[in-house]
Image (tube, rainbow, N blue to C red; front, side, top):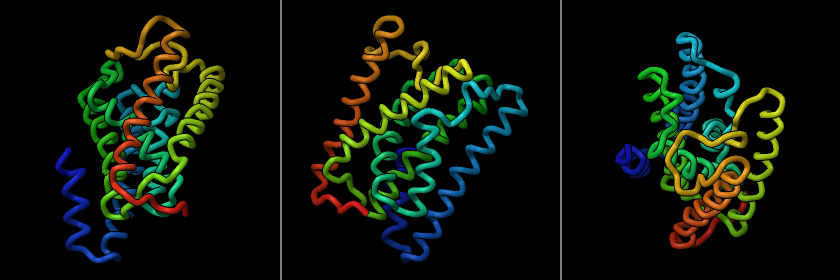
Length: 213
């Protein structure tokens, strides 16, 4: 998967025309949305789809659809959000998945593919479109993420769900998930900000920052 994230965009940028690159970006965008919707139908077929867990009301769920939109319109703010949300959330989901949601082999497969597609969309924008985070992007991402927490908390209240793990801890191993509710939420907040800071550091290293579009 790692080789796909790096070498596919590099090879495409080197050997394909701008028109062909745009066509591939559109194909990836359509495939991302189609795969996510198809996954919902397959879960319905298995009888495991649940509106309390399978709505796209979490960072990776948002990132799938925002990533597809980003590939189509290449907007700077959307890139920044998908960069922080997608890389931060998808890398964690691949390395430390919540196995309690893997009811069948398909669930494990679809989780890895969907998160891999998010990372691919970000690497495409970094390598092919030469996108970079702008000044203030880190602060914007932190503020918007916390606004999403408020939205998720409201949804959780309405449908008795646990989006963003605001109601109880996920079944994963993490040194930042300390204590019971609501104390572990502070650990998640600190970890999330640290992850965003770590992800922002390469942007400073990569050189010139792009202007917001």
